[in-house]
Length: 415
Image 1 (cartoon, rainbow, N blue to C red):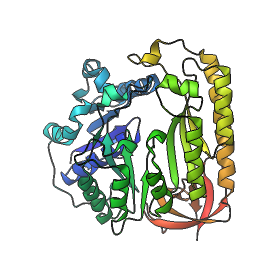
Image 2: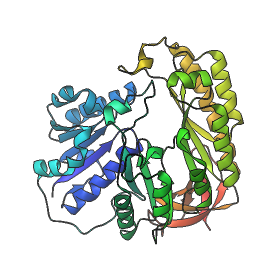
Image 3: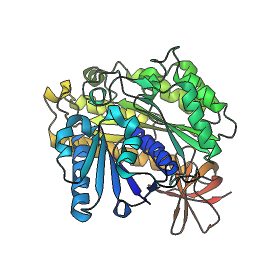
């Protein structure tokens, strides 16, 4: 039987695409491998958001060619929009599929690799179903290449998303994760126009669906009715990750983001008050062109005092083709120092948050089996190791009592 391995780089949307491809390939009789060394074909779903991401893709391609020269490769994703001809020159790359042809990836791969005996539907490798609901972005942040790589915002019709989520429930999934490049813009391009609130209300009505988890949310597109639904609907996981990027108004303006720290605080405080157990995270860019020491101090103090309990910190990486790439850059040593300071603060806040739940029982889902037990992910995004149990299975909903909090993994027991 032909075997395929899908390797993702970058965002949750890429993961959702790979989840869908895996399901389609399985139904066509193609084996989806767990290790690229065991596969005849490798699909590389690339990323080009940062220079580091590009380098990681290229290193992986070279590694396949070096360690497994007989493997045939199909490359797709954002890097194909930048360096299509360069990728095609790799001796093992059989096809380069740009983003605008991603919907045809499975059919093109089947054309290359052939089909096998159709397999009955079954769960494939993941404990949760990922559902892509939107792609592209209409915002023009001065640092971001995504609009040029993924195109305009395009939403999947609401009934198609509900159909996909319902099918996932019928296959045995208890949690779905909604993914979009600009998730909060969902439905604006549909006719008649819809919204993320409309979508969430429709999904929450699906019988048998236990939990819905959201990927990154844009604070500029979180109207009060949507916020009220997020804190009131029990099926929505109490875990929200916001693309804040910064807190200084001066830096936000240079980024092309019409936001203010006061608006950020209002949103974060509303979510925390509405669901006290909620995990609140954010993406933060450090060292954006023109970021002065005062801007950084304001950002640091904002993060320390805010309701956020963790943040993903990125040192600014200039991307050719964006306005910010041509502006005066912050020295690398300063970027590094500021990034390390914020990452330390994030670790401290997140550990303090986790300790609040020692002795409490939380709803969760089994993610995967480990040597000593099972890893569970709670609704509010605590990773919990449950040891000494062999009767659990990935995807199973459980209730866990937190017994110990750790910086990476907490400890717990099935309640």
